[in-house]
Each structure stands twice: as C-alpha cells, then as structure tokens.
Length: 275
Picture 1 (spheres, helix red, strand yellow):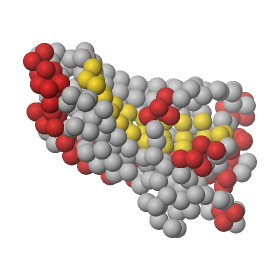
Picture 2 (cartoon, one colour):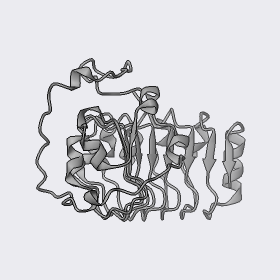
Picture 3 (cartoon, helix red, strand yellow):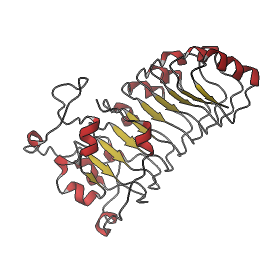
Picture 4 (cartoon, helix red, strand yellow):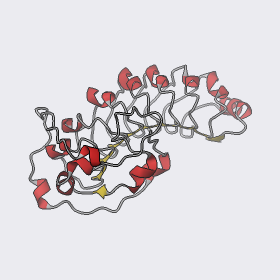
C-alpha cells in the first residue's frame, strides 16, 4: 500500500495553465453518472502491488511506482488516455469547478486539487475508487461529503485551509490513513472516532478552535507527529504523556499552564515538544 509521507505533501509543484478548452467544459454536478467501463487497456497497465493490496486491485501503485508515474497537469491530456493515468496535479489553477470528465480516470491513485477556489468536493470524483492520496487544501470547502469516507485505499488526506466546522464520525472508515491534515479550518471539536485510525503517523489539527482533545489518543500507537498548536486548549489528557513513540508534539499558541508542559517533558524526554 502506498503510504504518503508528510514531507511529500509539502512539495511544491511546477504548474502550467490549463488550455482554454478545459475551462469551457461543464462543471462537476450531483447528476454525474458512473463512468463507462473502458475495457481492454487495463491488463496492459504495469503496477506494483503492496502486501496489503488484494490481488485483484492491480491498479494500486506503490510509492516508488507512483513517484515515477507520469504527472498530468491538464484534464484534457489525461482523458486522452484515461486508463493509464495514475497522477493528476491541478494544484493552484483556480479552476472554480472541476470538469466532469475527470470521472473517466478510473485508475487514478493521486489527485491534487489544492488552491482551486472550490466550494465543495467535486461529486464527480466519487467513482475514483483507487485513490490513495487526495489533496484539497487551500479551497473554501465547508464539509466532507460522505463518499470521501468510502475511499477504501486512501492513505493520505489533506483538506487543510478550508472552512470545515465538523468532521463526521465516519472518518473512522478511512482506516488506511497514515496522514490526515485538517489544519486551518474552523473545527471546535474532533470526533473520538478519529482514534480508530490506528495507522496514522501524522495528524494535523493545528490552527483551529479546539478547546479539548478527547481521551483515547493513546490508541494511535503509530503516531509520530501530532500538531495541536494555535488552538484554545487549556489542558490535555494525562494519557498524552504515555505516547512515547511521538517524535514531535506541537502545542504552542495554546493557554496551557507551564506545569502541564513540564509534566509532558518529564514523561516524554525523547519527544521534541514545541511550546
């Protein structure tokens, strides 16, 4: 299974302008029908599988294969050969709407729609069942639609810098997530179900309006990077002090008493605690 590295998610891309023909395509709509089944070319696709991937899912690329895969930066170019497209980067193109033809890219593994002035997650991407990485940061999205929680292979989700006010308990369905970035939204709480994401390595909840962290965080036994800075936290569960696997813990910009920070530093001497 392809596991997304937080550093990869910060990478900057080189962008090109989309040809005018793309801008004139009809926008994604709720009435989008399921894409046609383009048979015949799938068997020719060479993909490397990970042990976690079922044998039938040959369209899942591992991290190295996905890195080497061609990066498309135009929907027009991508839909010219939809069955061979694994990576589409529309980052920073300010599209406003996403062309519905994107639904034809049924073997897409990585989709970057960051900074496109989107007000919703485009409904036409709901059939992209092989998505492992979804980047929606820097838009104006107010909610995560239910179909996103159905992406069974998703390992990285970045929906930071949007307008989210809540996260559904259905987040627990994305059990393969290793990176979840919800920073810079308008969240006042997070559901305890987030702790069911046992494969999480990096969790970004910073720059929100969180007043507390639910108990149960020690369930995230693989978590190494926890970002909680610039919220409204006055305290944290004592169990946070038992998360010895943490490499970095960000708490600055919260009205937490210094004695509580001292408690953490005594409990987690190997953790880099930023306060």
